[in-house]
Image (tube, rainbow, N blue to C red; front, side, top):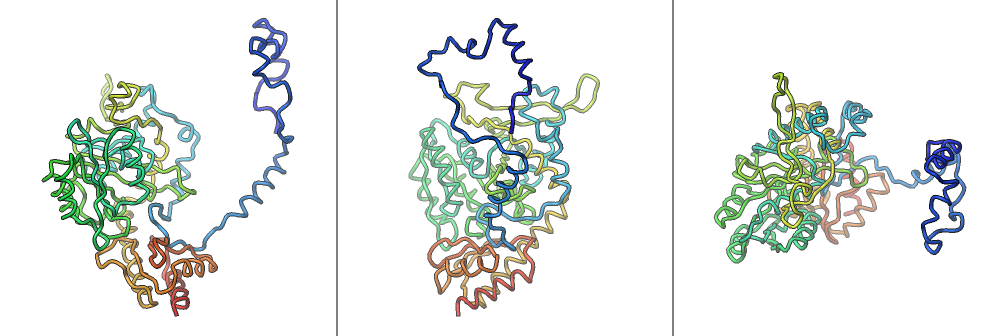
Length: 439
């Protein structure tokens, strides 16, 4: 493939001569021979672009591409308008890094500001931040926001995504906090048990999901009531599309709202990169990790953007920091903003309504095919069914047809999901295959 160093051999020799060396070996002579590699690296010869492309295409051919997807569980297959990629892959956006010199990063700051504004509109909260890795990290950071000297226990519902609970436990271990998990009851948070557990510990917060991991719609107002009665904060982890048609967490009285922004314009992409969104009340604003961009005016009266707050480890002693998150999610944040702008309010609501209606159509069809609905409660666009045959048998049968089935939760339970991309014909095909396997 050639050298990655752009200088010619003659230029390198000239630079060596300028600094007083005859060769690279001469320049590195101060390094003890015992730690130097005195032979060539044992790596294969470089290949041409044509040969490399052929190798990569053969590797890519091993990937399985499904005709239709009925699996969610944290990553969702939504339609992404082509304008989103067209805008966000522009060179000036792709190469942008953290705006350390904010005054000369007006474009990036504006994109973050627009993203934050839309997240506030979506959640109903007062303020939102940027630069959180994913939904699980956002949940863990949200819990850390609620911690103080007297309250160090995070109370988390069992109906939260298991992967998120593990991340919260990892964060808690690192900062000396505890995690108490509230058991589920009929696929929902057992709020009586939550109240009991919170009275027994120094609870900093109660975290629930809306909808929860099993697709069920939680009583968020009840969660807020239980948390506040115990003197703790209420955190709600939300599906962004559900926020467009359900009561907002702000209306329910939540203190912190978190979630995974992947459904808003980010492809599944084998697990990332994704973005976690966070929003909170103005009272909790100074505890938000990452950065907050604000709008102001310059000395000429023109609109300008500034880093209003950035509670990062560079600005506070590490052991005193409530968060040590340090990355730049600006490109993902801008992708979310471009997607929401392209879809518009009505477009987002339309997607949410399609998700709900198609999920209910599929659930009814699967029930007629022999799969019973595991939980009785209302659901958004995911639901759990109980099978008569092993769940893997259904998954394998659908895979043979080029269909990715729902996620097996146990030997006889499957978590299904629909989005606006699933057609009636695709759902009818799934129902027909399931009926045949169940027979």
